[in-house]
Length: 74
Image 1 (tube, one colour):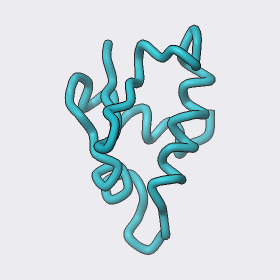
Image 2 (cartoon, one colour; image 1 turned 135 degrees about the horizontal axis):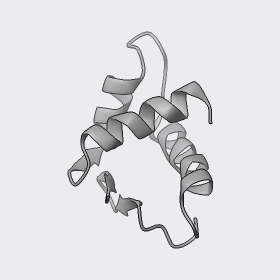
Image 3 (cartoon, helix red, strand yellow; image 1 turned 90 degrees about the vertical axis):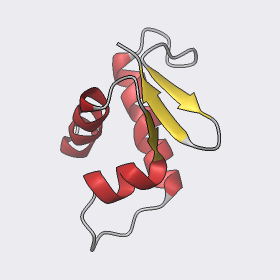
């Protein structure tokens, strides 16, 4: 797992059960001087799911909240 993937996972764990907007991930996990797009966030979430989900195509831990962001279920 990359350092950034770990940071995202930690952030999501600390906010488990809450809907996390992509903008919040961008501002709270990446530094201000780093240019990040929502697609970057989506790619990191995809990689995390491949590493922590039993079935990444049917996630049970990191859920997508369409049009908003993500939610971690523990």
